Image (cartoon, rainbow, N blue to C red; front, side, top):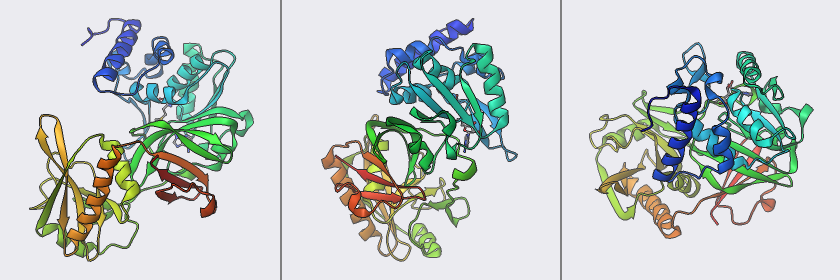
Length: 404
Ligand SMILES: C[S@@+](CC[C@H](N)C(=O)[O-])C[C@H]1O[C@@H](n2cnc3c(N)ncnc32)[C@H](O)[C@@H]1O
């Protein structure tokens, strides 16, 4: 561990050294030299004066900036690990014009360094307090050329379009048409996406009227979008807050599901190792038909899937009469796990079989990365890629998942 920093400059160098070390240890996406260099330059602490130097330069801490009345964080400075990853996904070059959605000031300053004096950076935030402070700290740090706009990013910022890159630093549910319309012909959007409950941050290149993902996408968590694009994902309370079902695309018999979950379970262990969990999750979300996500608090069920590994909602497959198959895992040895399926209810075994088919196909496919395409809503089925595995329809877009 690097020594406690004595100066901002030293803290900054320590932060980048730690990031580069972690990236190797955890096999995280590579941080390019150009991005590492700007991280060593921009004074991150200037943009979050309310936290300590150590917190400002921690690699995985997102200092909260604004909270709603109920205490929920509505704005934070993103963790530098995530910012570095997204800047590399964006592939910024000198002279590019960039729109950043969600302003903290710091990330805009990093972008400004990467696109240089020939480039242009515009950042927009819906919250005037956030843009006020971003403006103030950008000026203080010497980035007077970065444009800061207050407004709803649903409509982009047409005045300074077209953009070579649109970088979205807030959790988007859908991609508004303005983001694509305001891109250059060969532009790219880097954005967090919600794909049947799975979070992926994706670099999407423009190809005519649609967008196609680049090979690398990653798991990230962001504060939710406000304004016209806000979307609340409400779960179905199966048992208060202890058992909640998310994202079910069919009517669910809640009483039958609760009864099934409190009943006995059948276990299936098809001999598949649990690796690359976020890719696996997207595979399940893409391939399982009667898919949903289930949260079960620890120790609520006698035969539950819960335990220390089930704190997050897990992907499940539904069947009739409240039956369900739940993904489980158990240790195989140090740091190795295998995937299992627990079946509940009268048709649980049917659901488990469907689930196991999806898992076996994953195993045979060697866990490859999904291709994600975003098409405008209303695109006829016949115009979508023929290798599509699933199409997710949202108000503005049809998102296609395929596995090359
Ligand atoms: C994670 S913060 C941005 C962090 C920033 N990019 C940085 O430098 O670290 C997300 C921001 O998105 C803003 N936001 C939420 N919905 C928005 C919308 N519809 N339009 C513009 N900004 C929005 C929030 O106010 C919040 O400040």
